[in-house]
Length: 482
Image (tube, rainbow, N blue to C red):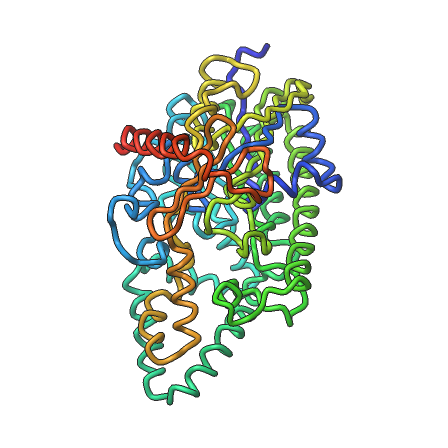
């Protein structure tokens, strides 16, 4: 066993769901990792969208115990429906994170991110000594003006966005209602396509190729310049919408969720197939990155972890994409852990079916580092939750609230957002999963082995459901202090 602390590499495959990972024979690199290392088939994302999940994974706190990430909705907070519109920062300044803990242990810590939520402006990079905002850099290399505008919008905070919406509403008031309705629907469709085309999200590659080049340069330079162990957190966003499909297919989920447009089987299937093509491409890029790491010597003593922050809906439960109720398609994500010694994987070949919480992944990593463990044997079991704290899109809530008085389409979308903004938590215990909705909707209970969550068994297990709710409330109350 190497006496030096291992390098820690975390591949965050944003928006990758478990159901399309472990059963997908096309993912040759990921499957090889799963077969050789530890494969957790019931890993649970702590949140249903990027900011909440990362905030929890980095701090070890449940989402609802992090006001900056959850908007304090669980404690009677704001009625706003778009967290990104209300907030730009999702963690307090100078908070103790996994990166800062490893940094204090002598690690060189670096974040490589292709997600605009996970960057140096949102505080989700707290504790990392070096942050590569690859989303901004990748777009700047192709559409510099668009990238600069997006960065300015993020940096300007809610005041900048409110001012933009006020101008839009002022323009709309001079239009007759029937014309406004038509123009609003046309604008949403055009905006959906225009943004995707301009920021290259319709392309197969959304930054993975550039990311691998940056990683290759980084590890070669660092291997020569310092001997500190390294913590690298790498976010790839290829699995995220929008998808490379025919341009005739609208990808604005709220036009479907509001039932303005029908999410028919053909549309659902094309979106899912495009998603699968993207993750096959992503599998290839993960393989390339691991090859470069092995050749550089980074994997002579390393712990490599592959995981995701949330999954994705493609029509299941009548839902599309994510930041929705925590059914299995969005709450269950892959978790694979593999130890490398002398550039070769230590073949443990173990499958863990018991539910584990990615909200506790940080403590499990620290245990490997401090106790010289071979692989993840941390306390990720027990207290397993996935929390939905509100809709994540932030570009039209303020405007919708104004336009709904004059546009039926704006009103339909606003109502759909309010319906799906209902806070919810999935609680895992004793072979069951409770989805508890905070008001206005009955709870649902499923057996863990009911993978599609088709049979709601709560009528026969009401006392167990009540106990699960109490357990969760107590757990959150004990973790509210940051």
